[in-house]
Image (cartoon, helix red, strand yellow):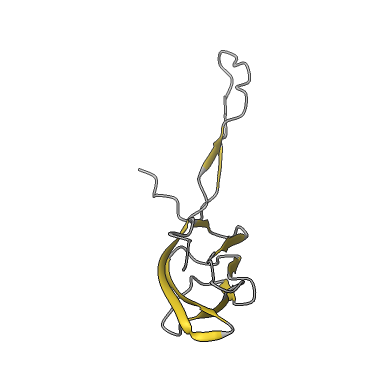
Length: 123
């Protein structure tokens, strides 16, 4: 029986690791990734550990389909389908402390934005 019911979201360019857990009748389960799975770019499945891991390289939704089976009785198996979303890195706006202004002098305060290469166009 596969106990895991969902996989947590991942973040672009951030290490990702999520275990798929099952309970077998005679001990540990063995795993295999079903060929029709479409893992997000940069991620892989480790059948020895039942682990989805890697560093996502695209913002996208993937599909992970796994089978767990009893190594002593491969006919005893269960399968599960999981959606896996990879989100963009959050935008972070940093506004430095405002310097004191002086009448008649040019003034500039430059905020910085990090976390995405897809910023909306300025208007």
